[in-house]
Figure 1: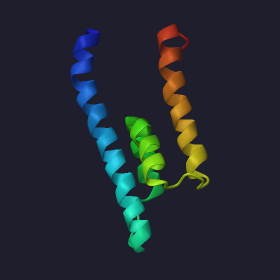
Figure 2: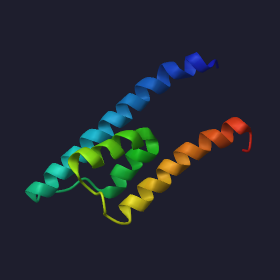
Figure 3: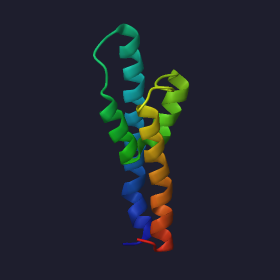
Figure 4: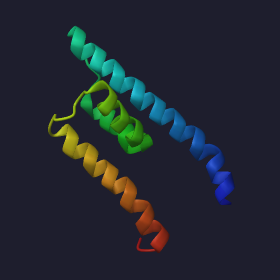
Length: 95
């Protein structure tokens, strides 16, 4: 499979998972303000792990939500580091 062929499905997937992560984070902030049922942290972290990390970081900043909450922050940072390092390791052939 050629890289351009992969990109034809990876790009829409990443857009969708980032949009879903951003919206979920915003809904969680709204629910926190209203005292309603919240979006589980595990779901937010799963969306990050599935590729939505950029949107989750953006939403954290824009909504000023979960910026100091532990262990959420440390888990999110670990996911981000893994998402940066894994492709590097794969490209360099250290798998």
